[in-house]
Length: 155
Image (tube, rainbow, N blue to C red; front, side, top):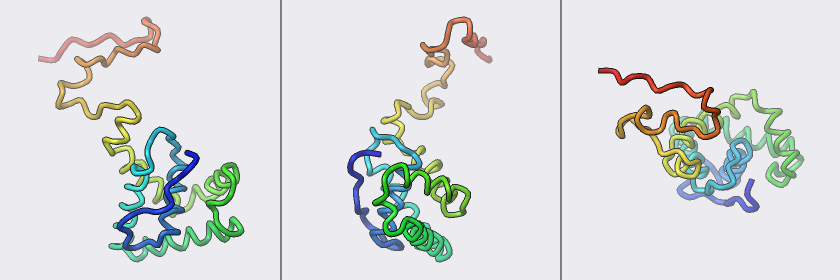
C-alpha cells in the first residue's frame, strides 16, 4: 500500500467518510498496485456508494461490516499495521461483504482505462484488428520453442 492513502472521497451519498475511507483501504490492501492512483480505487468506492444508495440492504451490509471490522480490530481497522490488516481481511474473505467489495473491484477497477494504462494494457484489440496481427506471439519472456505459431488467417 502506498505511504499515504486518501482519507476522503467525494460525492458520498450513502456512506459516511469513515466507511468510505475503510473501503478505500480495503480495496488498496486486497488489490495492491502501488503505481495506481487513489482516484482509481476511489472510483470503486463511489460506485459502491451509488449501489448502496439504491439498495438499503447493501448499504446496511457494508456499513455494519465496517463497524464489525473496526470492533474486531479493537478500534479503527485502518490503524492496524499492514500484517494485522491483511490477516483481518483473510479472516473475512468468505463473507458476503468481502465478496461484494472484491467483485466490484474485479469488475469496475480492472475495467477502468486509467488502470489499464498503469498496468501496461492497451485495452481491447478488436477495433485495432485483433491480437493475431498485433504481436500476439511477441512475448519476449517465452522461449522460442514454447511459442504457439501464428495460425493462417481465416478467409
